[in-house]
Length: 402
Image (cartoon, rainbow, N blue to C red; front, side, top):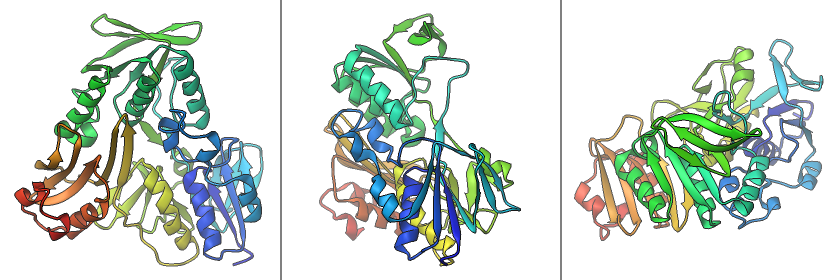
């Protein structure tokens, strides 16, 4: 395969791990990694966690240093995004006019923050530069308004409160994380933030972002109330970057549609990470997950497929968060909804494992401040067996016995 050329579009964690997997599997041909940003590929979770909070150094976010890419002969094309995929010519056109020929192509473009329409001066958190700007606000500001009670909004809120800022969170739903966790577990996070002094305003509608000199200085709500702030952060979700794939005629729905092998509707083009809606054998449907674990683990499967090997991505969806003294891991996917939640442990003390059940079968599990249980939770989900809810709730019954 020494004469082949592989191109990876998207120089984030998924792109870097794909290049690593290709070299690790003996591919000796040309690998070109194309990125929109000027930075080396980096991981995003620290941007709203340890790096934002000043608990880790900037260098720690990067997947590899420059020397690694040089040693592995990875041709980095940073700061010049891909603008066209010419499938007929098997070429990628970059913004700087360069044309890259490919034998196999991998798309790892990730997602972009959903933006508020026609508003300037509002902050978003997606890039390391965004995180730098927020770090400055945390170091110098006193009041922050956060629009959206999702993971990004709540993690930034925690960092801001620990930095001493007054924080107001504005959420349109009845509870933060309601769509993700359901009412019972969403309440845990609402109580957590209120216990830390956050002004959590739920079921609100934003009428206007107040600006001064191109800078957002507050928010006016539909009920007429005003929230003043040194800065406004919007964490209102993300949109997969599918425009390039759609323009090339690839199948796109919620993300780029792929098989379990991460192959797109073009047999020579693969995709991985946030941008992918991959068929999941366990759930029998396409699943798109905007979390770090997919960007970390999917590239190995995509790389295997690019090399002509059989591979299938069957990992359970996984994500984690750290907020104040709460650490959490979540496994699974409530594809068909759930009819009850079973809690094992102390909900009030925030030391528990929660299980989402449908027809007596575990669909998902979330461990809060309890560790080393993810393998057991994973086995429960994969087994598809009905479980006794009382035994599931009993800490004295080993999970593996169920």
